[in-house]
Image 1 (cartoon, rainbow, N blue to C red):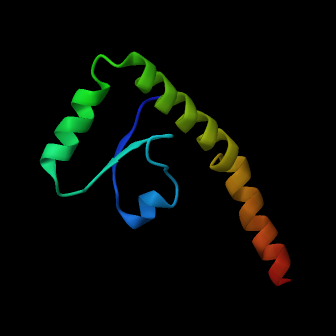
Image 2 (image 1 turned 45 degrees about the vertical axis):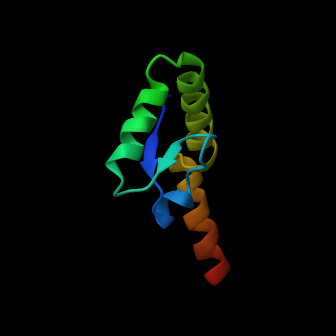
Length: 79
């Protein structure tokens, strides 16, 4: 997995968790983005942790199989 730096927009806050699988910053604050990048440069343990957590979450919650099952389960409930 890759380390993620994301904006703190509500839609992203629904799927990403700050300091667990992303470094979340204010969307319009260039200084915060710069600081987040500098935090990752040379900090291999943080990069590894964020990337690993993001990959695990993506596989567990957002794979095509999981998304399809969620949609089909929702349709089944409507029937």
